[in-house]
Image (tube, rainbow, N blue to C red; front, side):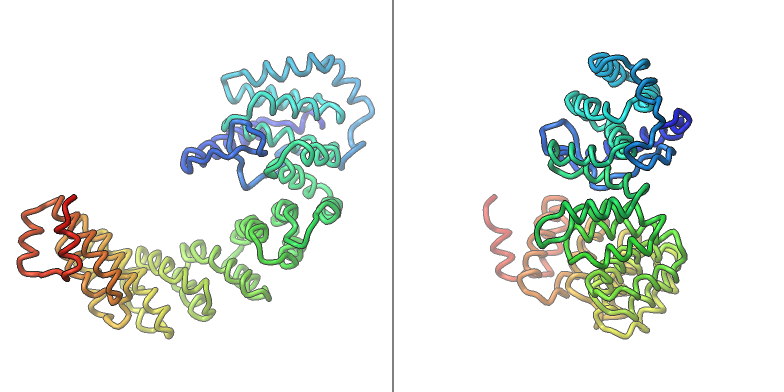
Length: 419
């Protein structure tokens, strides 16, 4: 790698990635390890390509004098390991990344394995995920086959192999595809293709789409679709909808629609709602309420006016639920008035959500709607939960309500049980 290819921008990018992974672990409480070998960190499911700008094409891509130069700079294997340890003990993340980038730029092709092995032995904390990926990506640029051989032999959860493949595919995609096809065993989806699709999504979406549509329905295909969608969604909405319409697999099409709907609704909620209504299926059933929630936040009256024009009754109910969900936290009375305006489209799920969200601000209006739940078991369960909570929160108001609103016997028995 040429020295000018390692820039401050790359260092700052890696620091940001490290912070992102740390945030994900904090949010999820996950204790997974990156390669299944007991190292102390969490594996990201979205490996990324190297940010170094060198366009080396693989083994033999370096100048012939590079090994000699790196040997003079880093010395023996023991000295290199000592230098890496010193770098990684640094507390300042910017200084640590600058030093690591310079260290990587001086490594010869045959020196990466020891560096990666030593890095892993030191333990990969959340803040070091970007640094680990940079080492792997740099190795992939000079000797992807050696890097993948190491990853297959020494790691298990896929982070290392995915990162290497993502980088390799950005340099020589067909070679990376051949390796993925050769090294995949079994009849299931090829787990290596998601990484390659991730790399190609932004630069060659046609080839990425070919690979994606050739995969069977699977978790791996879902991961590949996740990798493609952000690149597709940088285009205008019509281009995204055209791409989705061309998909022949209904399950894949539904998955793409679900991933696209929220983003498209942010700029065009009315158009997105019409698109969903014109393409009934699982995606429409699951996303119509979310789109109408976004629409109501932007144009409440426009969203309300459109509800009656939704042709399918289930979709119309979901549209109504989306608007009600937007209103209930700030104006339960307005949300209730809207439910009363479209009584035939009020579903049990809508009532349950209304009750949950309005109870904190107005327990009586919330509990008074429970009798609209048609399923007896769900209705009694909701009564028991809400009335019991109200009795603990405000026993005087709850008991006053109970004087004029007798509960079903099963619920009354439940509330009378000693706790």
